[in-house]
Length: 131
Image 1 (cartoon, rainbow, N blue to C red):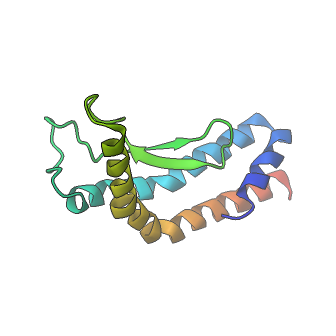
Image 2: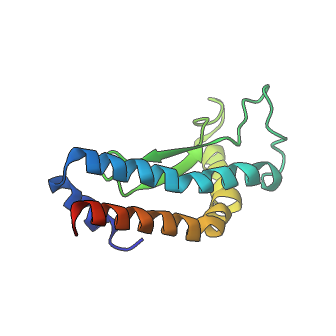
């Protein structure tokens, strides 16, 4: 979304509770993308097998917020990095495939929901703070 970074900068002069509400809501807005990416990963990543207890559900996703800039929200696999014996190139290729085959389509499918949720948040904050 355009202008989100500028908005976050302006929150530095606002009460901390308001900023926390904003960050929490951004994280929740990203959840549909994480869930859709998690559902797409097993069907679009060949050779990985279906997630199970034995392989620790490699397709499970997590949502996070960048500490330095709360306007940066990310979705990534819950498991970090691959096996230590995997080369950086193998890990990078996996990440690129996960991004292009599961996460990008998930974002595209849920973009309207994410935008609507953030717009609702901004409207709610605006009314609460008298903007």
